[in-house]
Length: 229
Ligand code: PEP
Image (tube, rainbow, N blue to C red; front, side, top):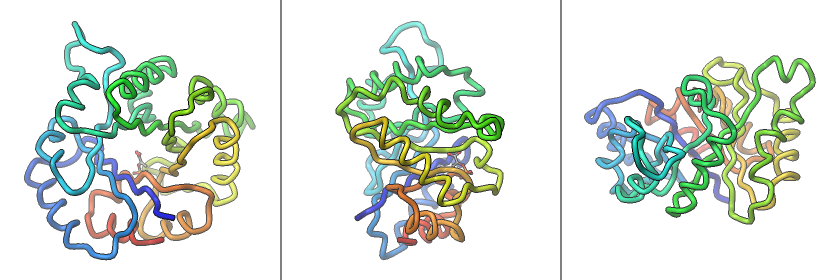
């Protein structure tokens, strides 16, 4: 079955470097998996009309009003955007977003038929203290009752940008937990995915795709990841 391969550019790139990225990526053949590229908000409109889907990296939890600097789900939809990451650990940390904020963002996106890519994942201390299951369950609590198809990206915080990666068994344990909690769910793994480890992750673990940060900035490496299963 086709996998979902998501790039997260974070706060990287310019209009010209992203144009070059799309040109280079489009030269790559044999990609049968679905690809989505999460761009900095300022460039979404420029690249929305691409044959590769683009995603926002965040959205406001409010519908409109006095929220200087924020971008609403309605604005994303108006610019032709059909996916948005929410709950990324960097947004949770730097923007002090709570699980409640993330659920409000989810509801805003659903209202405008934009598919949320919901990031969850534990800090190292939680894993070391054997609190993983309760931590993940509490991050997912608000999503348990929905029949909507969910895309959950499991991104252990200690694996993001660190070169550390959980074992396939560790990923499968969390993925089983998520599948037990949510009815209709696609699971992505994210955290230090690169062209060397992607094939093992995609072919041997119980996931539906990957979310790739640093390694997605090189179109050739990202294509190799997208071709690895
Ligand atoms: C991310 O931040 O979503 C991510 C997966 O980053 P990296 O691949 O660089 O660890």
